[in-house]
Length: 199
Image 1 (cartoon, helix red, strand yellow):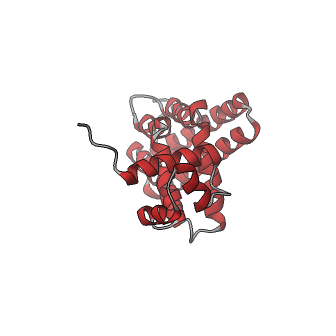
Image 2 (cartoon, helix red, strand yellow; image 1 turned 60 degrees about the horizontal axis):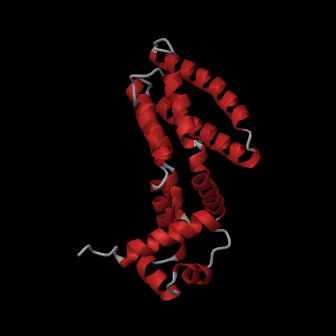
């Protein structure tokens, strides 16, 4: 007889479903518990607080959109030129299939900026992108300080373009803008490491 999914995992999956569909800005424990078929007390028992539950739900939701994680794998693949990797990574993040997750990401990001103490889990998780990209740039030969600065710049570029895409829906314009930026970024990496940009 097959084991049933543990109750906490089952609830987390349902909470992630709810957040992706409805967002979190107006989420209350009452509305959520009604939607997932439990009560406030059980949600707090399993997740501790609403903010911790949202942070876990975002992680659960992210796992359903592997294109986001694939971007980092692509960026680290040194078999390809850096411009190609940058373009492919951005396409993985901004793929139409990821729009549902990106909407939720930016909604929670906005809440976390306004109330960093309440959404500390999310803020801490959001810092992983620059660290991961900095490691990739260091592997390219970029000095540590420059790698950190350029990684933050690239994350800001990608997030800005994701936000623009969600707000305006003009995918072609965003792609063209990124292609130009990728060429310039790769050129700066080349200057740091002293090799041709497309090698």
